[in-house]
Image 1 (cartoon, rainbow, N blue to C red):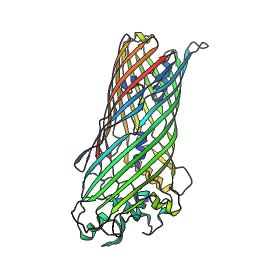
Image 2: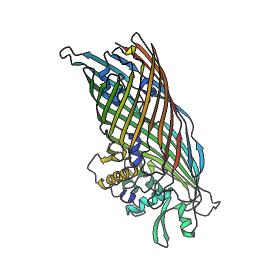
Image 3: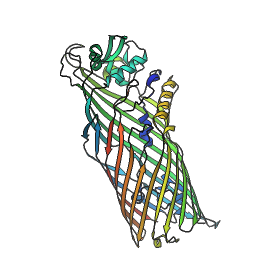
Image 4: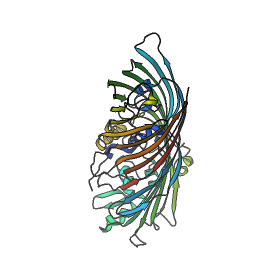
Length: 521
């Protein structure tokens, strides 16, 4: 297993610590946005097609194809199912069903009578679920290599704080404060002198043995990113279409993670029986982004498209609470010791802190091409199309910054260095097609989102296979689409800077059903 180091050596330099890790940036940027049923059926490959309100979020130049206005509503259902493998053991998470919202909104178009070369202009106001965080992850396995307490011990040691530091004001993350309070970490004397160690590893260090631990992680996430966008496009002589949009994404993310570690050695005198850490984390905020695009017709049946999506700049607020319970077999007195947020803050007269920071997502560049069967101005007589998009995303360029003047620059510099080291730029591919039969249409699509991790040992990708039907008649349209997602990812329960990090391999085979209803006017 390749060693993955996350530059933790300076994470304790800040006076106030939040809990950003590289995955916080990736979670917001490595997404497979929803759309109308039509756009999802063709794999989301709208970069050169247009005529769909989802173009507002892909290539706003596509709005220029509209000749009339329309109102669109796209409800849907997501069926979530995840499997995992951790330290050789396979697990299944409970299935979930959640409501989802595809692109919905209104489009208005008007002709241009003053200049016959500029045929008209189109505007849109749209809402879309650009990220869906609802899910459940579960894994369990035996670890003879490391303990999650080592991450807390490592952070505390690097903070250079005394072991009896007042925890409510200490420059430590919430989990490390709880680990100190419950004696999961403590000082001990080894051959290297006095060290801060985790209790599961303490006995192993003193007796030159290896800890045997059963580790279990149960993670439930909720929320998503709902983006509001205003789009505008112009049509030049039915040959060139130019457009832009401004997006305002609203992010809400909640995670409850319960990590349990149990001694599996059979000993009752090694000062560790079990520890459970429940972390309740929430992050929310608002961002802004800009998209610019152009679509051209170099030949009657051919369309080409280019769009650029600026980074989204988010202003985010996060808060972490939770509890820790340990049974150290009498090490810190009889019985089980419990600590929670009230133990650290409220009883000390201090409020549970919230942290504010800014996050900047990557740039996105998209090129696209389409071929139209029987390209004529009357779209009802067109025979269909095939289309493909290639998208470039620079995941390693994501950055986080402090939203205030606190002395935490070194901390955010370390997080940004970790992002740059951990992630790379990728190409995403989308392809789709449609065949028209008078008022009925059939569609197929495929989308592939590449591995964002720089380490080739981390196997990850997202794939969507889709198909759908459509109906158009007398200004009313109805589309129905099924999307099967075949995703692979990884999850790190904790990170260490002096050892290779263990992680779970995740397989998500979720599916989505989207129904779009629209009325033209």
